[in-house]
Image (cartoon, rainbow, N blue to C red):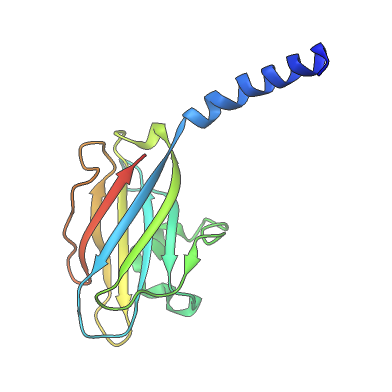
Length: 158
């Protein structure tokens, strides 16, 4: 390799590596209760310290006409035109587990942000903010109980 090319490669790596160090993967694992109904629609999202919408992590359930039942998420995220870009999948059956991995900026961790999940199942009660967990290093790995559909939510930081 020529010396100028090596210099360019070294400079590119020096600029790219710090950018990679400023984010972490978070893996959410939501274990659903055996609630005796159809598959649940779930919206996993972040809110800031003031409760304002900060972004969607995942939406389980593919029919947009039912998103109104994920009422807190739907209301908070309504102004986000990209809220569903690449973050949707099938609904989650009773007793099943949803596991989702996303990249989050380091600045969000231990800064007052919350992971929230809204839940709804057909012909059953909606559960806005089914679970709310502060996004802190201290909460990582600790199961948190939901209200109606989620048995437990655990998140891991990597």
